[in-house]
Image 1 (tube, rainbow, N blue to C red):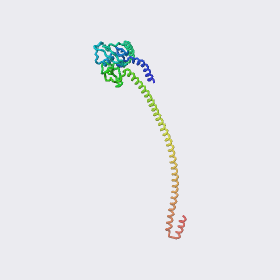
Image 2 (cartoon, one colour):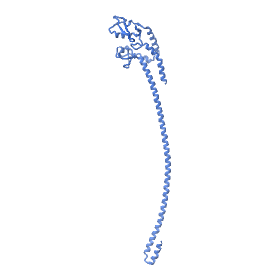
Image 3 (cartoon, rainbow, N blue to C red):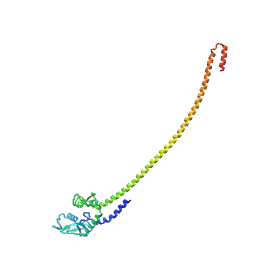
Image 4 (cartoon, rainbow, N blue to C red):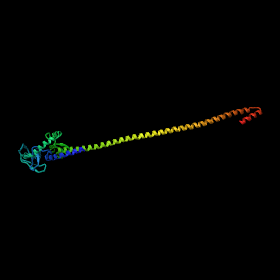
Length: 291
C-alpha cells in the first residue's frame, strides 16, 4: 500500500517537469535543444547542428566554409510543421538564434542537475558506438534499443520509430515500479496462502494425533475387557472340567470296586465248580448264586 502511494506521488511530481521538457525537445535529435538554437521562419526551433544535418541531407551538393557559403542557398522542410524553409547563401548560419530559449534551457539544466541522481548524470555521458561524438539520446521503438540522433537521421534506424531516451527511461521505470508493486502484492498473497496452508497442516497433524490417541485408548479398554472375559471363561472351563473329572473318577472307583467283587466271585465260582462232592457242590453253589 505504501509502495503504490509512493509511485503515484513520484509520478505526480514528475508530470510538470515532463511537460516543460516536451517544450524544450528538438524534433530532430529528440533531445533537449543544444546551443546555439536557431529559430525558423515558421517560429519553430532547432539545434543549429540538427538544422545543419537536415539541410545537408536535403542539399547534398551544398558546401559551406564556416558561416559564409561559396555557393547559393538551399531549402528544407521544417520537421515540426513541414513548412518549406528557404535559406540564403549563409545556410543555417543565416538563421537567428533564439536566445530566450537558450536562457530557459540553461536555467532548467541548472535546476535539474541539482536534483538529478548521480547514476542518471553518469548515464547521460554514454556515447554512440557508431558515432563517437554523438550521445545516446533517443530510443528506437522498432528495434527496442537506445541510439543517437545520427543513427536516426542517417544510420540503421533511419526508417524506425523513435522517442526521447528520457521519456522511455521514465516510462519504463514507472512500469517497473508498478510491476514491482504488483509482484510485492502477489508475493504477500502467496505468503498469506502459504501461512494458511501451514496452519492447516498443523491442524491436520494435531487432529491425527488426537484420533490415534483416542483409538489407542479405546483398544486398550477393549483389550482390558477381553482379557477379563478371557479369564472368566477360562475359570468357568476349569471349574466344569474339574466337576466332570470328579464325577467320572468317582464312577471309575465305584465300577472298580464292583469289578473287584465280581472277580473274586468268579474265583469262588470256579472253586465251587471243582468240588467233586455233590452235596458240598450244591452247598457252595448256593452261596455263589446268592452273591
